[in-house]
Length: 335
Image (cartoon, rainbow, N blue to C red; front, side):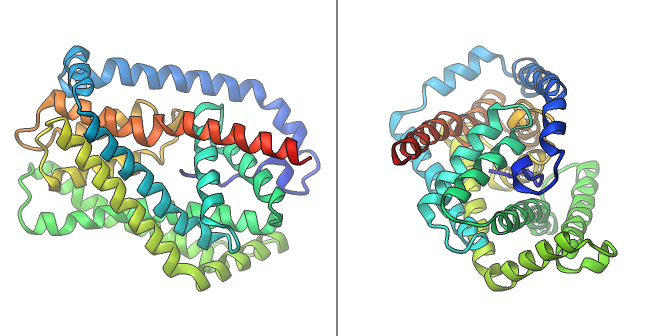
């Protein structure tokens, strides 16, 4: 899950924030509807064109995946979420792994289905952490740190492609130049994002509130950067394993170096936020990158892409929704 850096209206002392929130509602709904329509169009129309595989062939592969393989994929998916709780608990000292998993899944469910879902997911997580006794400042720091680690990790991923290029990855000259440019530019962007947090002088003079937040964030990073990084690395490794396994069970025929390229593209595409949860945009980008692999099967690639997204995007909605309903019921009983 990627949280939105914006805090909910109740998270700060800005007096007119709720009014602005209400006034923006029609715009938010219009943006959301446009995003859903665009995402559905990309998924239903553009994906078959990009992959070169009709929906009939793709669906036939998906439904033929053995139940044993599906169980293994579910285990990998859950293992990745559990690994991610290492990062989340490091970013909010005192948070248990169980509650971190609850924050991740419920926030993702809300973020994937509501207009400006990232903000709504943050608002939900804010209220949950307040019920558990965490301060607004601790949650604000948690939001910044988890976003920072998420974004920087995605920007640094293309560095892993360097050994493949050195070893002579069979790609066209144009694609090689594009990969080299990404490998150089994206880590620089990530370094800049880190510098903004670590050194306030990068942005000039900050207000007292922003400076307190920066100091809190810097303190968390100094004391927990190892756990933050280990958790994120384990999460990404398990996500990569999940993608590779999805492609394997659908017979995509994509070699691991190209799976890595596709994974980098998928992680970067999730940053765009143009459609709810990256619907359509991520699928098209991932399938297009995977089809660069020599000998890749179009229908297998499309089926593997959909299977991967069904787990990392689609499944989080009902699971997170059920967990949210259970948490809400428990709060009402306790009250």
